[in-house]
Image (tube, rainbow, N blue to C red; front, side):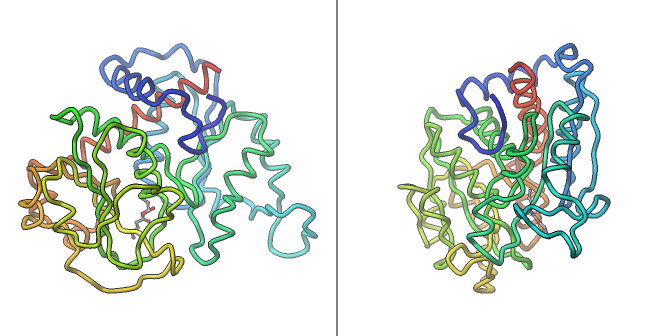
Length: 313
Ligand code: SN0
């Protein structure tokens, strides 16, 4: 593995999942990362990604440097040939080159602006780091994807499944803020690569990018989609077609006990943070069916498997 920008960087997904599950059982890997440094730059808030990736690096024996680059660093210029006479103090060319001398792996979180679809889809931040860094780059959630979360989700489904080919439903829920499509994009992408019966349900106007969902069935009737589900992944995202917009205020999409009853006693997943009683009801989050804490624990082993592969190459 050269970088971990998106799921295409994984050479063998089943093997990587198996490796992560193995790391969860036996974490004695502290030699590989000795004398190596992971640098993490956050342009947005984080709890799980930041701490699970730091923990994963330390379990591999690495040193870790973390910076809230969005608030503490110089404002970065990403445009080639820019005349830098305004608010941006440092060009990514220098920043990435300098960081590559301090770090053996650079990891970056940079959410989409959700205003200009073309700009977000160009993935300027993460791609510029990849272009100008001379060390591997890891995506800690970018404008269009969250591949560490997706690997975690794949591990969780493979660990908890009770049937050979479980039914997995990704369901939209209302949220007070316009959120990225990154998590559902990567979840859809990874589910397509596994042997599962995968269905997406969302209101009209919220269909994800067809280039990502491909031939995955998209059902606009939530209850119909949830029928007999073995896994339900609840997540809000803002509209892709009406880019970055919140189109409705349909609270009936909240995942509650009544909806859980339609499923096959499903395991309920969410990447967290979750808005209680808006996205998922207390009665579900506090039930045995909720796997969100288990899922968050798997973040460490997903990150560890990725860092291990990057260190080895
Ligand atoms: C982010 C998202 O992409 O949906 C990160 C999830 C891992 N979530 C949020 O920004 C939620 C913020 C909120 O106000 O609830």
